[in-house]
Length: 107
Image 1 (tube, rainbow, N blue to C red):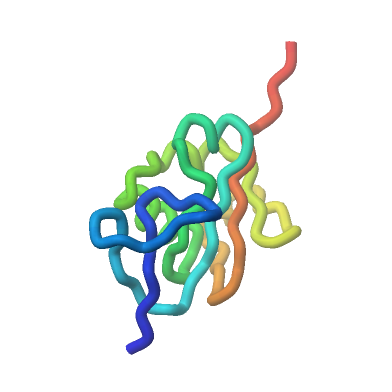
Image 2: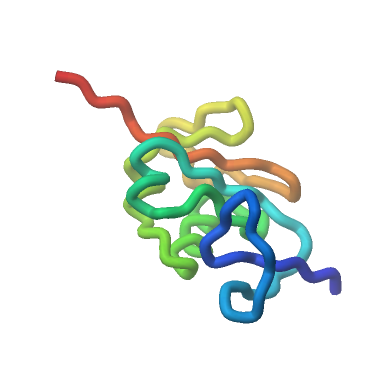
């Protein structure tokens, strides 16, 4: 089985070391965090296994990212915004990217 490093707290210049990684199947989806979500989680991205948004939420929660960020975020799979009741059943495949953007607020 092909395995790849998954950092618990990924940054663009991360290097694997035994204290901050786990090993996963090499089929991967990148989850990127933007705006306040990035600030609040302290993470820029995670690398997780392919699956539905709901399944990816569970993987992210196991890595310390509260599911509330997925529920509150504006979600994009690539350039497609995920909306409505089907957004959690949308399936991401190997090489896909899921982006979580902070919702805009106004006053």
